[in-house]
Length: 589
Image (tube, rainbow, N blue to C red):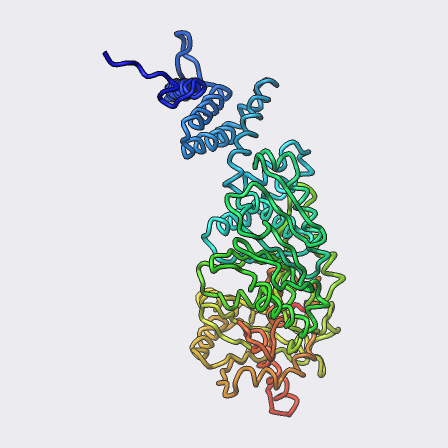
């Protein structure tokens, strides 16, 4: 008869055996709980309890998903555990009206499940991380909660950067909106996920770096952070500007996070194996106006900061205000223009209708707020700092236009218009009208549209009928003669305007530069007299950004004004322009 082996003989201690039996019991209980909850959730509309039909209320529903999540954790099924925590958040969102009618104890239970769901999901989901960090704070003091309606898309793009969908992400927005605060939280999330890797933060000064370092230390030492990353330990050095997190899966010989200003030495002491994050390498418009300072920032970024990358898989995040067309962010955007693994986001202060893009749910930055700022800045500075349209001042020949609020008294000596034709596509049809009093020319109106000729011919025709110009010149190139014929047919019998075409022989840039002094003598509407997003507003914005030295995406506004300037010069030279009486009375703006 075979002898039975004892526990000690088999190498298993009594404690091990007890633990095995305990684990088996826990697994059995988890499997039983899953079956019970799955049966309960088969029909959310109604189910039987104690033999009676009743609707499964939100508390029972959420509790069932919670028990299933915990059971899957016991069975070490991370995927299904995650899905059940997510389901809790879906239920609470879809059935929010039911929560309002729950008793205080029930609300407390639902809140606990919601908070636990956010904390569990926060490790892998940046949006949940932002939410979990703020649990327990007053609603109005929460960063993400009060800005979620505006910055949620940025949060999703940052998630994609961390997941490896992008190699580089650029975000630009006006000062004091959200940029660095969001970037700081993203960095805190990333180092919690990868304490054994090395990340690198760089900015315009070491002082700025130390501020961000202190903000991150507050986050990683908070109770909320430790509930997301349990067991995390933090070391830091304010002298050497680094933060180190433990425990690590492996030791790469470097700290978790380094900080350095663009004015700092980086030789040999900094490594970056996971995320390189640069924030505003240029500090102000004043610095951006110095070409040497901008060039130095680009050289420092490309020749030093980026050289800290330990491999070709390092993710890069650039957050900045767009101060100049050749700043580091602009240089990287231009060089990666057609790269699908790079994305660049611009959030201007005002949209095309002149309305604020930053209407947060608490303390919104209103349209009036930005208009007050605009009133005390140059147009170029506002376009750069707040509209995220970087402009090089050098070569901007129409940056300081003359303005007027009222036309001179009496009838103008001559009214004429020019039309730079565009049938469709990226170019604008540009048709400004000129009212000339003596030698002074005023531009009270314009048609400035991208639509095709079926839309613009009636617009231009009605524009002529409204202003009754003596002359109307259409550029003959690219089908302008056909377009002019269509306009003639439209206005026939309703305007005495002499419409003619002229083929341009000179290069556009040469013509614009030639007539620049005359164009700058014209008077344009005061900003208070036209609406943001109107034809006139878009016309002026394109004109002011025109750069005689640079690469212009569009030059339609400047070219049509060069046509007007040529018409004025021809009259002044005594070219024998016949003054044709206009039909009817004209309304002067």
